[in-house]
Length: 110
Length: 117
Image 1 (cartoon, rainbow over the protein chains, first blue to last red):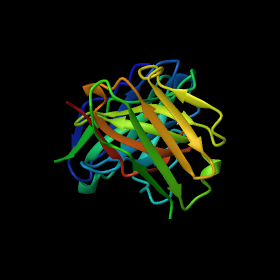
Image 2 (image 1 turned 90 degrees about the vertical axis):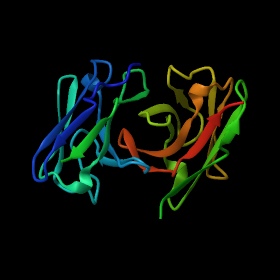
Image 3 (image 1 turned 30 degrees about the horizontal axis):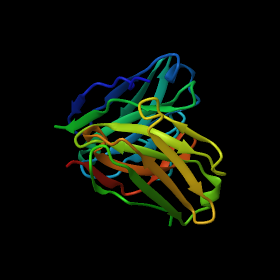
Image 4 (image 1 turned 30 degrees about the vertical axis):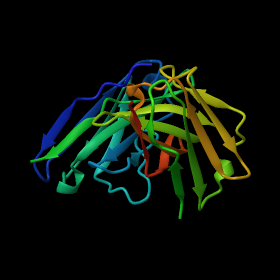
């Protein structure tokens, strides 16, 4: 199972909108019940930001949103803030009953 | 408060064996799938395995299948991960995490494993 493909980095100024793509295949994202997204600032534990493509757990700001189209899922951060600077990972369940993470994207707030 | 705490890491010899434990508290541990995820230094997250609430079903990533075993002690609210034939590529922070809606909502703090002679 190959890792899902994410851009290595994205950046934006405070207040701007950035979108991170997560591309897989018909064996994972394309047929998955859910793609989830995780935020990991340096030296910290991953934090669940979205599940089932677009549902925010309690406490996650509504600036974070998600979507899916075909074999690609996306995470959008609107109104970018300095505290959003972190690595972000997507993950999908697969048709073989396993899970796969994305390659990770570093978000930089300029 | 939901807590997952890993133990058993440290320095291990190449070719050796490793056993990690994950202890859960503050929630109905017996009702959740528990997963293992690892992250090599400076690298991304890699899913390794999951074990069912009753401990009867375990699933493994292709990359580690045959080298790892996950088990569960429902009486002690713990999950164990055993890894054999260790190499430098197994050096990583190992996390246990609680399964939630095809993802993970609570993670342990992680435990560092270094494979080196």
